[in-house]
Image 1 (cartoon, one colour):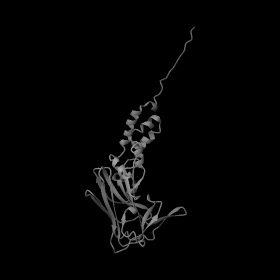
Image 2 (cartoon, rainbow, N blue to C red):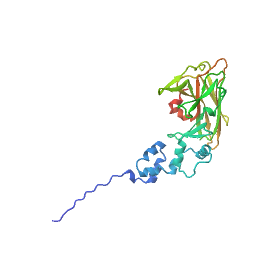
Image 3 (tube, rainbow, N blue to C red):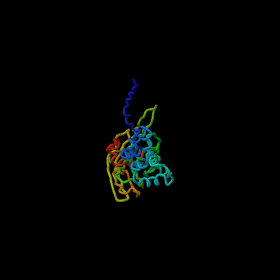
Image 4 (cartoon, rainbow, N blue to C red):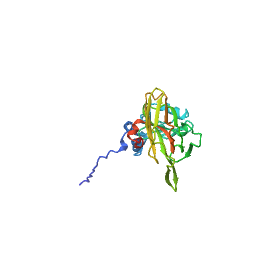
Length: 282
C-alpha cells in the first residue's frame, strides 16, 4: 500500500500591496489632498505613489510659479518636488515686511490672503488720543489697531498680487470692545463702544481692471470677531498681478464712534462663504 499525500491549497487573497504604484498614483490624481494623505499611510506602495509630481501638480494653482516668485522673491529652492511645494504653500507665509500673510487652504487648495492693520492706512493712527496698537493672541499678527474715539473714521488699503483665476471676496475683520485675559478667562470691555448704531459703515473695493464693489451696514455683535463683506472681484489671468484697493469709512461728523478693534483685511475665494460659517455674519 502506497502512501498518499493530500495537498489542499487555497488561492491567496489579493492585497493592496499588489497594486502597481503607477495605478495608485493615477487614482490619487483625482482625489482631494486630505484623501491622498490618508491613503499614503496604508503601505509603502501608496506612500511612494503619493509623492509623484503629477499627483500634486493637479492640486497646485495653475500660476504657482508666479506665487512662488511673489512670496519668496526668487529664493525658493527649485529642487523640491511638487508635494513639498504644495505643503509649503499651505503653510502661512509672511511677506511685504510682515504685514501680509498668504496660504493655500489645505482641503480645497484655494488661495487665501490677509493684510494686517499695520499694513493699512488709518486716518489718525499716529495720534494716541484716538488710536493705538494693542497686543493680542486673537490675531494672526499678534496685534490689532484699537480705536478709543474719533469723529472721522477712515481706513484704506491696497494689495497687488497674482491671484489664481477665480472669484474672490474681501472682508474686514472687526471686533467691538477690547478683549483681554483675566485669571485665564477671556473678558471683553465694551465701555467705549458707541456710535456704530447711528449711521452705517461703508465698505468699498476697486480693482486695477475697473471692477467695483461696495456694501454698508451697522456694526454690531460686541464681544466677538465679525467679518464684514466689502465686495467681490473676478480674476481672469492668474499670471498677471491684480491690484485691489479697498476702504472702510464712517465720516459723518455729527457724532463720535469708538471702542473698535481692527485686526486685518481678508481675501478669500467667494466659494468659501458656502462652507465657512464665520464669513456669513454680515
